[in-house]
Image (cartoon, rainbow, N blue to C red):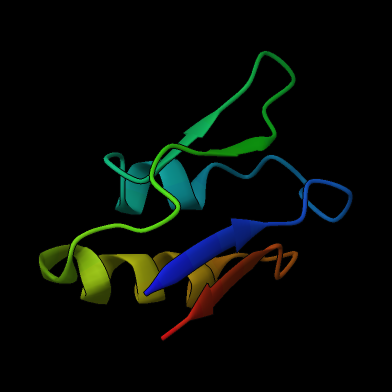
Length: 63
């Protein structure tokens, strides 16, 4: 699995950082930061949930 974030679309809702704090964080402006672009398999479900719940669809997950 590979994770990417498109900061130009991010609105800073923080859903990703709350749902998967090992993979996502927010910068000083509240925009998404990807901490692990290739997270381990055990985080797959929470990463997909974070991407699904992102209101701006700025998280891309490639399996």
